[in-house]
Image (cartoon, rainbow, N blue to C red):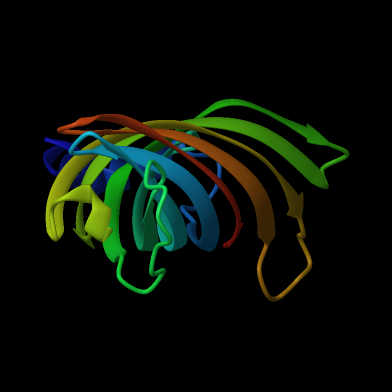
Length: 186
């Protein structure tokens, strides 16, 4: 469903450009995130390093894609764990919309964005969980807070944006949370 919406929006990018007051921009960013997921009755902790791309569709709407490498641990286990036996990969695709933004002196922009999407994860699970591996589809909803320094005369990146992300991730066994800190450039 999310992929169909994303394709439809990408196909209408030409119409979206006319609506925007500036040319569409792409962003590249990275993030480190911490969270937990309910898997098979266990609370599995996650630490993720992510890489993301975005494309601006309109002034307030963007499409996003992310890849995340995960380290996993069973937060409910009392025995020592081998940190090398649990890892995974997670892909996200979704839409992001600016909910509120303000610019100070045409140099510093503060924003709050909402996001909605889905994806899939392939993981080798901690031995204490009971399953060796899992492939889990997921949906997510989140909110991002951040700021950006606007650089008009710079020949490199026009903007760099530090951001904080809080995301709820729904999987078949329940809802988990993730908190991340990242940086993006256009």
